[in-house]
Structures are given as C-alpha cells and as structure tokens.
Length: 405
Image 1 (cartoon, one colour):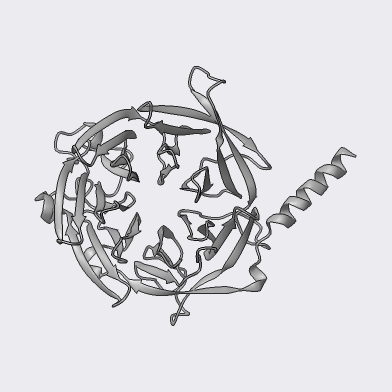
Image 2 (cartoon, rainbow, N blue to C red):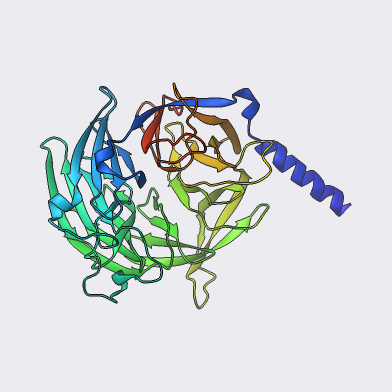
C-alpha cells in the first residue's frame, strides 16, 4: 500500500509540474550583438535596465579591459560608457587585468548606475590574488555612472587583489552589497558616506544575491547552507537548508526575490527542480557549532520541459513584472525559456529559443537577464552555439512578463 501511495504522489507531482511545451514549440527573440570592440565573446551577470529605459551591459575582455556599454531599445544603437583600463589607468594583462564586469549592474532610485570589475581568466592553480605575488591583480574597482550628466566616477578598489561578484542594492539604506573573489568576503558599500565594510567570508560563491522586503540579503554559502545578512543586526548568519519535497538538494546558482519579498525563487546548475526558499521559516532555535539557524527550501516543481529526460544548464534567472520566475534551461545544446508561476506552483516551457531572422543560430548559454517596465525580458548570451557561431549578444523577448492586473 505504501508503494502505491508513493507512486501516486510522484505521478501527481510530475503531472502538476509538467511544462506546456506542446502549446508553443519555439519562442523567438530579437538579437542585438554587443559591439565587437568591447569584448572577446563573453559577459556574465552584468545586465540591467536603467531608469532611462536603456539596457546596461558589462562585458568580459579576457586579458584586457572590460567595458560597460549601453543599448538604446528605441534606436537599437549601442554606446560605450566605461573602458575600465582607461578610467583606472591600469595596464595589467592576463589574470591581472580588469577584464570583467561580472557583478550584477545595480540601479539606484536616482538613476545612478553601479558596476564593479573582476579579474581575468581564473587560474585555479596559481592565483596571485591570494598574495603569492606582489605584482598580482590590484583588485576590483567600483564605478558609478550618471546618465543625466554622462559622468563616470571610479570609487576605487573594494578589496585588494580580489575581484567583485554578486551584487544587490538597498535603495532605502543606500547600501551596495557584493562579495569578493576568490576569498568570498561579504562587502558593504555605503553610497552616502562612501565607506566600505568587510564582514568576512561567506564560504560560498553565489552568482546572484537576493534581497527581501526587510533589506536582508541572501546568497549561497557552504554546501547545504544559505547565508543571510541582516542590516538590523549588521551580522552574517549561516542557515542550514531543510528540504521539503522530492529529490536531493543542490546549492542554487541563480536566485531572485519574489514580488512581495517573502520568498526566494532559485534554480541550480544541473538541478531538477524550481526551488522556493520560504523566508517566514527562518529559525534560530536550532543552532549548531557551524550554523546559526535554518531555512526551509521547497522543491515546488520540475525545472525542465515535458518529455526531456534530464535537467540542464540553468545559469540565469529574473523576476518578471507578472511576479513569475523566468530562467533558461539548456539541455543537449537546446535552449528553452522556462517560466515558473508561484501562484499556480507550475512551470511552463515557453518554447525552445530561436533568433528571429536567423534560423541557423542556436543561442546556448544565457549569463544574465533583466526585465523592463512593460514586461520585456532581455537575456545576455555569450558567443557560442551548436553549428553556426552566435555572436555575444543581448536577445529581446517583447512583453512576455506583463504585469498582472
């Protein structure tokens, strides 16, 4: 009897969570290649829409200088805003170059754009950023750009010999949050005082940070742990993840805060499920020698399309204006655009991603995403592809996440 009940639960869960791929086999996006002079084929999480309606993109130029560029959706034209080496007057090459705008582009409520740099190609055997060489990477710079005055300010190196990743903004408290690479220190930059605070290592390497309605910041820590920064106590906490639902827990890679700021939606590289972290379940009653409390994570539904036998690459995610969680899933070199509806607790496959007017191109790896006011989603794809090579580009999906009325 127990076996029959278990089988019924699994079937019911799978049926509830199936993707609706048969309704729309393909979804087309418009491709806008990033100017070739500003990169050598790659970019990361650094993409966001400004208050001016323009799309700000940070590039990677391995061994040289990264650029912050701006795309105008009304004219389809690009503009080069920041050449990192030109602003910093640095001349490093290889690993020692300011070759990535990796961290999320952040936008304050006054329209100021914030961006931070990271070192070049990582060499995980010999890393001068750890201090083995005094001529190593100087450290990632923090920049601000004022679109109204076209003014760029270099706010200096945030942590010596370390690059900057992650990225979240608390507009009420005027604080920027990042973490450093490779030592994974949690960094707080006060916009008004221009002071930096270092709270020490988080023990994890999250590409994304999520910030809730209370201004608490979350990220992936050590295996099986989510760290939390509470601005009220000015402290970091390690929360042991308690899994509810089927499957095994995998540390999330992409994560976003829900529309009401009460949950975090996430997905993992190679993960099978959309994950919901319920912030109301945070508890400090069960402490251990190496954790401060716990948080519940629910595997709410499958993260890949119906008919696909295995999970894929889930590198990016964004909250739509409709409150749904959108993320790409690349399976066997086929990229799908997925949508998770938190009200229905269901995933839907919006289709295999195709490039409008370029049927031979197959975009593979989306590194970052952003959503405009009208629900249009932009995805940043690196130069890759199975078959004809796709240029490093942003791809636009018009009004697919329109706000619910």
